[in-house]
Amino acid sequence: MDDPRNLPLEGASNFRDIGGVTAAGGRALKRGILFRSDELSHLTRADLEKLRALKLKSIIDLRTSDERRSKRLPLPGGEDIRPFHIPIRPGQDFTRGQLFVYILRHPGQLDFEKLMREYYFTMAFERTTQIGEIVTLLADESNLPALIHCTAGKDRTGFLAALVQLAVGVAPGTVMEDYLLTNRLLKPERKDFVRSLRWINLLKTSPEGIQPVLEARREYLQAALDEILRRYRTIEAYLERGCGVEAKSLRRLRGLLLA
Image (cartoon, rainbow, N blue to C red; front, side, top):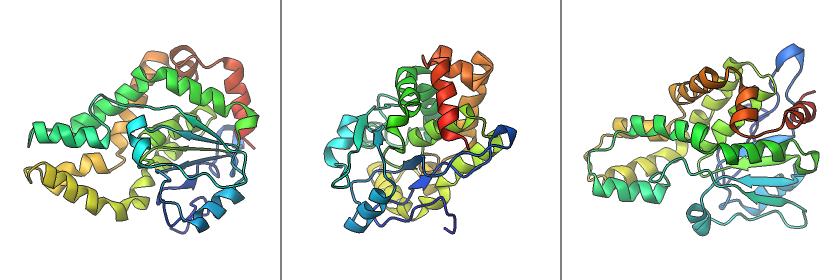
């Protein structure tokens, strides 16, 4: 895609800068400070050179231990990059392997759209400790530039990126557009996953029925954000009271990320 915020890599398809967008008061979210991606275990030597050029100080891995075990992260050599493993498990049965097991046990019975909605609510209201830890890490200048990633870079990473952008004053519409960009970047990788899911579901679910798992959908993120605002009124109050982020950390975050 012809977007300067996207970093084309051979071993990852959803790597991009979350900066370069307008925030409140005519300020802008800086580029080159915070990146997001899908999993990085297939990065090539050329990819690692591109990563090295970003001068990352930290990589925040949202994957579970099971996900990480088979897909190790190759850190660029010669760099002092701190890896932080902060797993966000959206639900008991939602890692890819667990999802396959669940489908085998319940062929043709899984409501993927309902599952995805629950996924986002679990992240928003049951993984608040992890969210608070991540936001606090990003408010420390010694950890920046930083990269946040999970497996697809779609839901866990997308939700965290949206929270950070909203917290520093990026307009909700802009945040949603950035979140939905994943659908264009991940498109080439979906066919294999659809075939795997349909096979393990004994072909009882159509490709259309599986789509809710494969897409970043406006309604998933919006429903979670609407409920956050219903309970806390503002994203800042949610991060402070709900996730334990100190007000001074949010002020530092804005100072570090905004130009």
